Image (cartoon, rainbow, N blue to C red; front, side, top):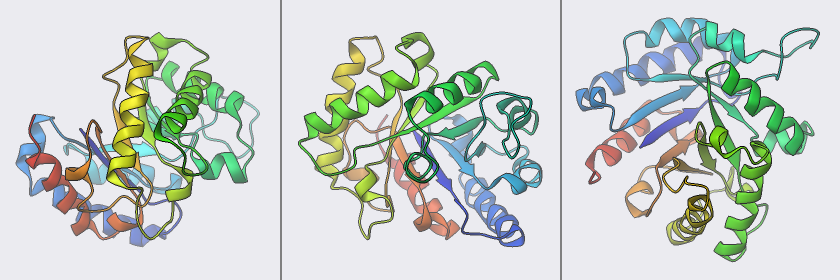
Amino acid sequence: MYIGVSTKMYMGYRHSLSWLEHLRGEVDARPALVAGRVVPFVIPSFPVLPEAARILEGSPLLLGAQNCGWAQGPWTGEVSPSLLAELGVRLVEIGHAERRRHFGEDDAVVALKVRAAVEAGLTPLLCVGEEAVADPAVSASFVFRQISAAVREDWAAAARLVIAYEPVWAIGAAEPAGAAYVSDVVAHLRESLAEHGLAGLPIIYGGSAKPGLLPELRGVSGLFLGRFAHDAANFGVVLDEALGLPN
């Protein structure tokens, strides 16, 4: 079970550090997290990463990055996965809908980044999701194709992923996608993944995710939170929900 949060570009530097201190406090207040059944993670913006690693040292909180390049070398403005690993980053978000839409990242670019992240020892947090509400089986088929493209049908590499299922239409919405819809999409997706021995791949839900949603979901491996967890107390509430679920 993974419970994570990204700050996107909402917070300044000092705000980010203060928030991270509060987030660590929420995690430290729940010693059951040390057992590892629920894995918390946090993804701040790039300039915060070195200080974030210091704040999180000794904590169960995994540090993530919001993006990565696909190689070292002459790539102005990019950040290589190997550099992220050196900074203590454990997982990296790849293929978010905002990157695909606003920065032109297609399946080929996503695949390059996934491969580079895996080679650097990072866990790719692969973001996938349909553009509009559809029949759950249709949405699951679209998402499966995104996953297949991201690993270039190398299903051994796919075993290294954590999937963030984020319906594009739910990102930034007032409410998340309905629990029944999400559960049905994930169930159909697991059927397709099972054909490649990956039925148990972690699939977490994101898209206006907030407290109260997780207990309503079936077959989902956690939540990827956004603005609702920019209040660290809400992150703590969701951690309690995850810890309270049966094994």
